[in-house]
Image 1: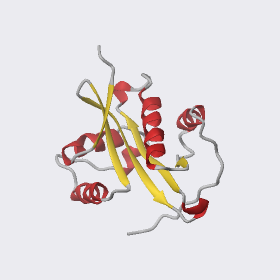
Image 2: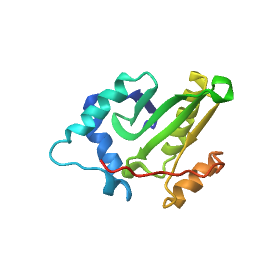
Image 3: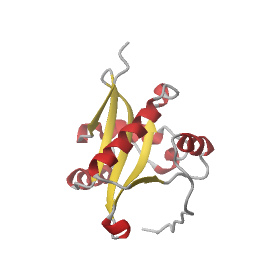
Image 4: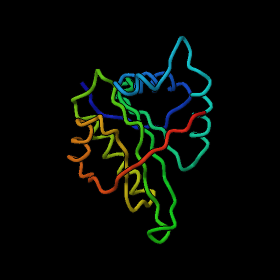
Length: 155
């Protein structure tokens, strides 16, 4: 069986499958919503992401099956002499394909893509409730260098 991964920018037709991958996760199940059709909010968000040259929502396929997804954001800073950073978010591997090294290849791709864009570093945030994910990121060379803080806004 061919296990070559294909990386491509997501299209609107991928949204349902992407949200299914986001849902297929302990924390994601409490954040995402899916019914017979996707709520309009996902389509609005997709349009904003797709039209922003500093955003890449990527789908990863193997043998025509969507096996993973992630979002890569390029953030321009004044610090580091006007440096550019890559922010990796919403990485999910389809649960049927976990444990096959796909996650590592996803990160290799995202890191190389960030280098191509001229980023001086790549960063991510992960929930402290994900010890397995933290160990995985550390195995890739990521280090805990900052203390992150969030303020939840009611809307």
